[in-house]
Amino acid sequence: MASGVLPGIGALISSVIGIGAIWHMYYAIGQYLHLEFSKDILKAIASAIIVNIVTQLAGVITMEILASFVPGLAIITNGICLFGVTYIAGLLFLKALVHIFKAGGDPSKMTAQEIESRIKEAARDANLRDEFRNAKSTFKQMRKEGTLNEQSRGVDINSD
Image (cartoon, rainbow, N blue to C red):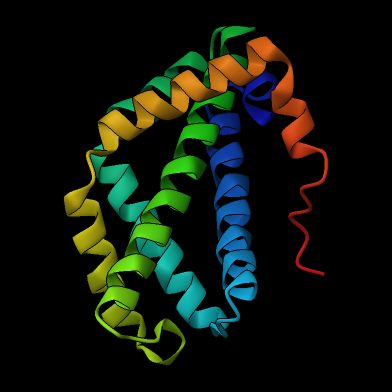
């Protein structure tokens, strides 16, 4: 991971890579649900969710950057943070879709602003700090069991 090699800036580089993976996750979820999202809408969705996560978990992100200066600790902290942010981003996206579907809407026909509004509703309903604790616990459990690598083997984040 970049945070282990480039203290400080490496954590930011890893976060940017993580955002790309989140964007692709939204695309894959849309494909699975047979929803056609434009790239602009997917970027707007990712931006809205990332902003909600960053504002509510600013302390966690700061800790990730500070930990990047400590060899060894940086890689574990970065892994937990990226896993947690990706987990929460997926959770918020799915909760926003549930809000939309329950209201009888079709997210593929909504504007970016309408979807962002639903994301804000989902973020208000969720306690992101508790969700991050759940993600951290899941990460540690999967790492201990050795299933973390197994789960990610078949995952392809390329846009091809």
